[in-house]
Image (cartoon, rainbow, N blue to C red; front, side, top):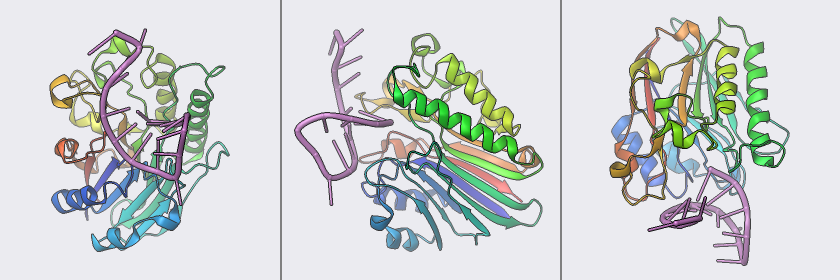
Length: 268
DNA sequence: ATGGTCGACTTTCGA
């Protein structure tokens, strides 16, 4: 059973529905996880997504902000949406499906709060939200059995390694790369002994990014990126993935998202 | 140069 899973912060699914369609046609994911859909469930473009071949469309949205969605061509055995931090926002959706070799596999789709501009929980409510959110995620995965088959994808809004950002020194105090956030991400990774799948394919000695700011005339020329998007797998799946790609082409499509999609191939 | 650009039922905020 070959399965291709993709994750993409789309920055408004309605503004970029044509890009989603092009991405599906060209990269052919079996499961597609989107973040920042920015649309209330009542206005979600269901028909367009189903027309792309996804029979199963699971959404968790809110008006104007945040929102995640997971589309699947594979029948689902379970769907779960967890509300973190009791703030009424929509940042998680999990789907499960059956496999011949790994039992039931669960794919968690996350959009972690960006955290605002100042890395201080006392003066910046958004940063406190980010810290609390990561804490609740860690708590959740600590409770889950280490033998379970789990995949976590999404925009975690943290670039942990020195080569996950264009300049380690210049970003040390910038939210997304502060030592405190990196420490919290490490705790999250330890909670289920997650494998950072993407870095299995590109060693930490090499620069690797998935996001480039809109505030740059030519993102390819300045190449001031950060690796904010991730795919992690639990230990039972550590040898089930067969390939990975950060798809750079969609970042140059017309009216692009500021994030590039990431693809992961599995054989179960 | 403390800039710059996106998207959202918007004249401002979140990213």
